[in-house]
Length: 401
Image 1 (cartoon, rainbow, N blue to C red):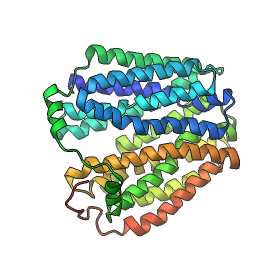
Image 2: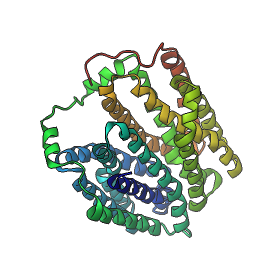
Image 3: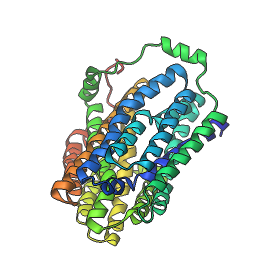
Image 4: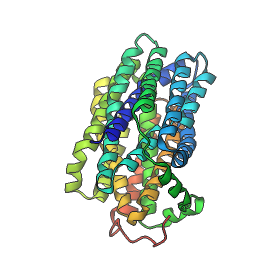
């Protein structure tokens, strides 16, 4: 492994570790400042919305000015946002910290661009795959550490610890990380025409008989599974009266299951089953698991239910994009996966707001029931629009998106 690649993977791990430190405590932090469940959902949604706007801009600026300068700007924004979070004494400051982090927090997308610059075509997939592993391991350890640091309701300590980790990342980039995109290469890229990004291009993609159903499925799967992820801490607080520490440990358990699937089990599954079969099977298991989650009445039952829920969610997260890459020409893979990523970001905006509203007005079981209903409708959708399509790689139009 090259030194720049090792540095950027370490950077991703530390970045995700810092973010996941504060993830479990946000609902409790907000409620200590008299926020309702619906307001908690808005808080989580605000970060995702501003990230949806900010990340593409940060990425585009990195094409012009280089990855390293924009990494420095992005990480500096993350440090400031975590310090604001740790010192927040009011809801407006809490919202401001998450909005700032969203606008300047294109850290992972910048890391992916950096790895694309420093790897060749043969090793690029492996390099990008290692980002997923670093990301997953950060989420395994972060929630547990954050829960331990927040013992006794000390919400400032995990936030300031996350700021310290981000400051270490900033120092590492300043001292050790070289620029991956030379000036000459940036100038050449500036002369290249760029794919159209418009509602017309989106409609063209959705109109394709193979691509459209897969993108639509990804959106609704994202709504159901992201609602589970973002509203989980609030659910266990309302239903099981769990605090930050046990919630953090349970989230680490879920993260470990997902990493196990995406890092190992998925390789065995795709050898035995087609992408279409895994999408169908995963949808069925996820729908049933979300319904069981809604009915959970004890922590032991919750741990049992979370196993098939996390495993099916992890499978669908991988095979959906795998199927997409097989449904377009090679030169369209990046643009199509970009649309998939945009749909995932949209789901991250809607899901916490929807989940908070449902808990606020209908009780803690409502997000699970809603998620099960969404995935139930997807079972019918997959049956009619994906499972019996003769070949997921049906030929698209020659024109690229």
